[in-house]
Length: 320
Ligand SMILES: [Zn+2]
Image (cartoon, rainbow, N blue to C red; front, side):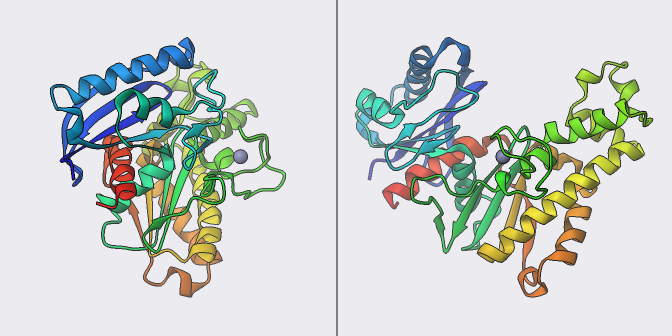
């Protein structure tokens, strides 16, 4: 088997590529701005250039495969991006074929949250378990579900969208068009929206001072800063988000009976402010036989999770 894997993390802001060993060691990395507004053709060119630079002088036949993590919805079986909200103009782009033809190497495409789950399972927090659910909580809530050592894909590769479990039937509108999804109640923007609404309704909060009165600047990072300093309104916003997270995870436990839940993403920086109410909700709502022996841990791979996920996808698909 050729000794290297080329991993690509296509994001709405950055395109990252890395030359890796199948064991997850990153040997060389290259990044450039996606400039998503320039449209698919320009982004594809930038992506190809980023891949070429990461390959460098290594002969093409020494690259076993190219793994790509990209925003969905996408079909990992056909390798087509069906349309990504943060990549304008990407409708039915056959990304896998375009890249494999350009570089002449086997290429695999996966949803970014799914491959991040695969990264934690292959190289990170979930290395020692067979059944694991990964949730990343930031601008949205993404997830990946590993069942008996395999990533759950579903009929069209669209499975494992835990961010769109409905946890409040009449809740706020979600980006997907539905109401009351977990993502609409516990993501970073959802937490910020909750705080803004309460301030507008007359509640006092230290958050207002942190943004010099400009409520449009409130985000989850600012809310966390206020919460860590003891601000009641900010603490309660994380409490509500944590409770909804607990409801979502309760359903996941009953459906998949995982050994481990891995939590990543910027919102988890709130730590116990989010995790304690989540845990209390699990203890109150999940049947005890589902929480016995369950580990709930923070993600281990940090900012490299996207690249390592793309590498893990290639390694898994090749069976090496
Ligand atoms: Zn939704």
